[in-house]
Image (tube, rainbow, N blue to C red; front, side, top):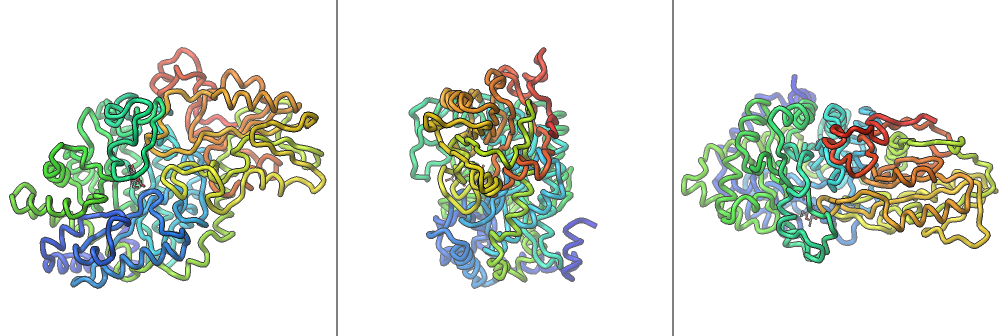
Length: 620
Ligand code: BGC
Ligand code: BGC
């Protein structure tokens, strides 16, 4: 029995009944009602009254699409207002509200934030990832959100890509295993199966194979000093692009079909088998053809060969890239197999264009009916008709200690010990003094990274949780002194047996994180030197969305821990540094010796070994 049939059975809703209900609704729907179901609008671009007026099927919060003030109760109120409007329409079809809950319900202030996927890849622990899915689902349902654009099942092949950390691993099989685990957790968040959170496997397909300098954004805005990428045109911020930004994200994957199938497709098959009912198309291209208009990959392969019964949603404004003529964009996407369009702003224009396409015969009504049928079926299977407002009592548990424990466990299991000489680790609790340096040692925002409260993430006390320093302070005996200095400029006489330096990447998301060079930068090197002079043993924690190039600095470091992007519960770092728990994490990506070993294909062609192999990780 499929995961979906099984959950319907548990809810006493046999497949045949779902099919009857879908037929019933479809037979009564006007064209306007059908087109509305296929439309997804971002929350600040529509009112509840307009949701009703245009029969809108879905609303989303993009990264940082938060209510003001950003509280769980306000989230719930915001989502419920849209839902209420949808339910007041003639056919009362509930709305699907979607968010990027990619490491917990990460836009919500006070929600627990888990390590980003790269850290979970290091854990190699599907049971843990499934529990993370369950906790995330409960926090989502508390705010009446039923849909997350997760898991990302990208298989990143180039560490310069700013979305590397959103992927679990460079290894397809590990991605498949963990993506399926998260999907299961989202689906099985309630013992009685009465309601689920809908997963969305993204970005279909081979986004992780995009090549350097193939990003369409780079062509439009490659230079330093140019402003935000064009697909973000409605966002007010004018962001300066540093060298390397938007060089790879959304680019072309010039791989052959065999490697598309063996490396990039299996995680979708696994997620679908685990119950993922939505798939998001990728901004990227395959062999020069955009995925959003790729009939072979969407219709023939995904829906045909793989038998995918759910619906395909676009990425944010992605169809606009298909053709200079918007009308053509809409036709091409829907004809290729897109079922729901993340518009996200000008929904009137989208609906009018699709209507014109149907009336002019460019899109057959049969195609529209297929899309709407898929959307309705998913909504029914989910339990959305029975529980459109999620689960209000769960609000009390949002961000609770039990949920935070799971994130703390995840962090412990994500840490990879790369070097440990002179018995530097574990630390002794009785050491009289510790020197701790680096901004990331005492900053929740930095340890959460991108997709945290805001789209790009930012430094500072952005949400609740524990910083690394707070975790260390809680772990040492009262007698031990911890001297902390963000920039490592300690008082002249400060010395200690052990110094801990946290290095970090500034938060980023998507192409803003594309980087030509992953080497440590002069400021980081200076910080290492400063602390090195003041301690006998130097321990380095690397807070980063990917491996960094540090071959030259390695000799100065006694113990090195890859902590990835740890999330909100940094007690987990002290837990392992002090030896209460062992190091168990294994590298989810090979660790290159130099930039010459990036991308992965270059490493595979290299005469030299990587600095550390995929799967490497010391236990003590
Ligand atoms: C990203 C997706 C995300 C969507 C909605 C896009 O820019 O590529 O991963 O789900 O925005 O926020
Ligand atoms: C939104 C993100 C989205 C991005 C796409 C931002 O304004 O907040 O969710 O992914 O635009 O460019």
